[in-house]
Image (cartoon, rainbow, N blue to C red):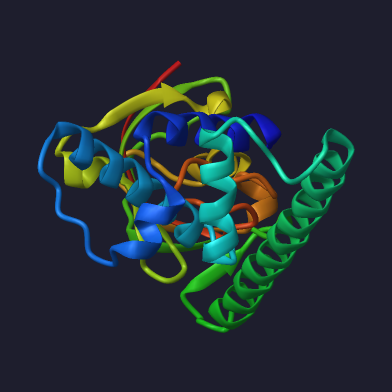
Length: 230
């Protein structure tokens, strides 16, 4: 975390801003490349803290940046370490709260979803609904490769990945994916389409998977199985 913070301050060092200028002029025009770059970097830093829900005293934040530009600081190294530890604790607490909220939302969704008579639940907690079935076709084993189309969303409908939208099927080893997929695909036959409702423990667990899948997420996949290759 400290490396991230120091990297941000290092970016700010190249902008040649001054705290006095900021106070004197509320609206500053951008007359050249340096002005544009300076504003852009400051705006990006502000967006980073805003989107990560980090609350700041903007005046002291600006003063801290200007002190850095002047190669000075009002905090000694020992105090910096203490403040950094405090900041990390705050962020970890916030992350834990968000994780618990996401998991609880998923739990409630699955509890309500299993009331649907068309939804079946396996011993592991995986839920699935059959969209299209067939009396023919073959089922894959965990060691097989499969070719599928899929459409993945969070429980709020956010699409995080979709071969359907890309217009191209995907082939992968069934033992190379999340547990919910490994179990679920073995319930299918080629030519069938299922919807899987995957609890976080059968998905990515408490860790995030890219920017669109928060830790603890329940995942929904609509999957159509085309081919099975041993």
